[in-house]
Structure formats: C-alpha cells, structure tokens
Image 1 (tube, one colour):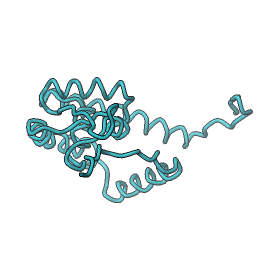
Image 2 (cartoon, helix red, strand yellow; image 1 turned 90 degrees about the horizontal axis):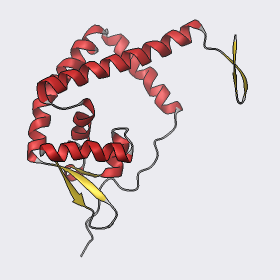
Image 3 (tube, one colour; image 1 turned 30 degrees about the vertical axis):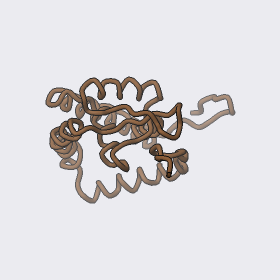
Amino acid sequence: MTTELATGPVAALDAPEMAAWRAYLFTHARLSRRLDDELQAAHGLSLAEYDALIQLVNAPARQLRMSTLAESVLLSRSGITRLVDRLVTAGFVERRACPTDARGAEAALTPAGLDALRSATSTHIAGVRRYFTNVIAAADQEVIATALDMVNTALGPPEPLASATCATPSA
C-alpha cells in the first residue's frame, strides 16, 4: 500500500512501524496526562509549570531568558508568556527586564518557587517510577533510552540559543 503525498508515492508504515509509532504516541499522551493530573491534584501545578520550574532551578543563577525557557519546555513564546504569568501570580517566578536588551525579559525562580518545586518533585518522581520505570525492566529501559537517543540524533542538533540568560554589562 502507498500513500500519495505532495512529493510522490510513499510506502505506508508496515505493521511493526505503525505499532511502535502508535504505542509511543498513545503512551506519551496518557503518561503526560496522568503525571499532570497528579501534580495538579497534589500541588496545583501543571506538568508544564513543573517543567518550567525544573528548567529554572537548573539554570545559571536560576533564571533564563523567556525565549530560552520557551524552547526548553517546548512552548511558543505566547504559551510561555501565559505559563510564566501563572507562575508569577503564584509567586513562584519573577519576571525581570534584561539589562543588556531592552526588548528581552527573564524569568527567575523565587524562594517560594523553589519550595513548590521541592514539594512537587516527590510526587513527580513517584509517578514516573509507578507508571514508567517500575513497569519496564532495566534492560528495556536501556533499549528505550538508546532508541530515543537515535531518534534525537537523527533530528539533528537543536537550534542554537542566542544566550540562555541576560549578561550583566561589565563595568
């Protein structure tokens, strides 16, 4: 069987290809929803908000340019703006002007954000273990990691970021 695309006929996915692809999509969607639901119920944080806090805690000085944060959590600039707005309202993040770029802004983790992250991390890790690592044998975890690394490598290097943070001008 073939599928007509703009570039010409392309063979349809065979049964193993389709099974692997659908299993990945279905599992990713269900697992993400389940982890999100648990974080929401226990901590009032979405999985995307948790991810943003993780990116910030691991960043230099616990702050990132908004554009870098958007790329790190795979959101559009408008999506990251709304997410950061929610985190600012909760007191978990501060928005700061970029001292070296009048158009730039950074998101900075607050002490309250660090506390919220610390609290939510045990829930998140427990969920990852319960629904993912505890149900997959260690050898299979290695196979999954290797296979997904190969997919990431085939996608090529990520787009280079201008600068993760706003550098303070030197005196």
